[in-house]
Image (cartoon, rainbow, N blue to C red):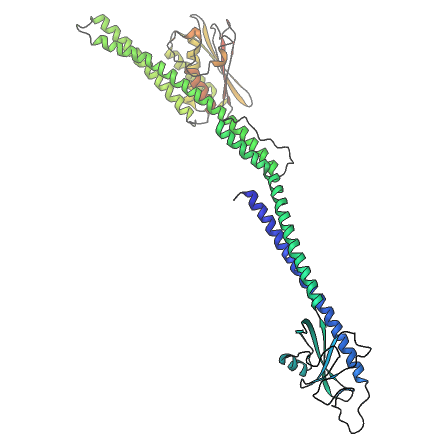
Length: 482
């Protein structure tokens, strides 16, 4: 069952309960008012009769006070009552003794027709309580009112007054029919209007559903939901859905870029690994030749094989570092004296490249937040990269500066510089500028440096001009001295 149908049925059910309750209350109120009016008229008529009956002259001396009314026959025989001015014309009326015997009737009641009084009603009247009941007389429904009264002679009698209720029943039946038909028509109309209103209110949600289905089918996260209505709950839903689509689009683009980068990484890694492995395999085949090669050539092949194996080890180690960085490797962030760090890096760089000219200038004090081993690896990568591109006889300079918020460590070379079209790509994995294609590097050093710097909460930048060398700068937060 759709939400539109459920909402419409809910509206209709609420309206139906309201209409039924209202109609029942209205019908009950009208019925009560109609019958109360009839009962009031009957009681007034009975009260008028009892007042007139109390002023009738008493019987002659010696005649019993329980005799028939004037103009009536002997007790126990029905006679007619002459209507008085206090009686409404056309009303049925009769009197009974306290035992229930009919004493007299008005002319509109025939000799074989009387106003009934049930045994329960007779007992109630004998106990001094007025009684109402309905009966069918001469084919017409009547409301009969019975009331005890005491005559002027002290005799207790019962007066019964009736009123036809056919017109009242017809009026109430017409009212009941009007309420039933009217309520039914109103509910049908309300269902139709509720169906239309629910469709209008849910149309933006329907558009959101269609948009979501289209996005799922086409994988087009650039689409948005159009909503021109007010910023109500549905409007907020459309806005939230569009914001979610924007986030999904951004994440999807990032995922596509990551997948493309991963494909390039795998392709480049395969290429870099294939070259030394091919060389090693070729050398092994040469060593297995028969007859064996001479001793000098054999030594050259072993030396070449050792170099290629070392190259493979370095490449695998670099790939391992990148894999750990991609997995979110958490680096230590300890306070490190800048001067001590640069002195260690300088000594290790001189051991690796004893003939290189390296200048080092460090501040007298200052603490940096970071991982000491990672920072040494970063700086050695930058120094090695600078030495590769620095002509013989020129120096590579290392310098550091301390400010209130961060420490900047720079590595400057005096090489040919980096071309503007190459500069944006130098931190990409396996990327090597055309000038360095002949080198032994795999193009991973600067990528590793960037990954480690960012994992430690710092940044790395580069400035270069063709023919004027390059400057790589590492910025890390200062340690809190307090």
